[in-house]
Image (tube, rainbow, N blue to C red):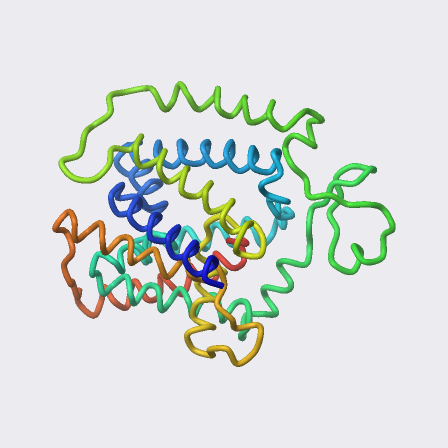
Length: 310
């Protein structure tokens, strides 16, 4: 338990620190790319993604991670959920990690967005929207000896053939490192193009991207070693787990604290320490209209993230 608590919190603190110093958020990365043709944060995202792909798969291959828990492709839920999530992060002013680390910067709007995010997750997974969730997540794409098949839950229970989660390398029929190598080769020209601006405070995009990738790769390893199974970094399910524990305590085994919930808890702590160090921490309370907007954005984000699977 001590190792679970300390490792989860420490990885969360490191994540919050790097996110705050890198000004990193998925919403900002895609927003800047689309609206002002600024690739800075998007490059950090791509670099972090490459580091995680290489690091997590290497850990799996050398036996440090038993399984990366690859998710099945659930087309209706993944596509619709992703679209709804995109709407939500724009309204909330940040993605799941973004609103959590901004809590540590003193932004009251981020607290309100987190509240909406939590309610949206619970409403979709456990509340009145559960029938919609069950309907959209009931159809999966599976890889079988007979090829790719679209199967609902009932058909999956009846068929006798072996099914696998489809991956790019299995679909093509090559070693996974071939696919990873192609992805890296395709990304490098994009990453090295243009000069790297040095911010007055915080990290440049290459430093932020590299450190985010390292921290998340470390999270894959630490969650496997002390957290009951490799989970990496996610803020959707773990946000629900954190609030379940805070509200319901240890009333049953379902509500004990999880490694990933501790990571979520550590994120604003790390952001607070970073913001204090840069003299950027300041309690900020916007007007009622903005608070309503970010709350609704959090609700929508919780719905979309739950449907999309993260």
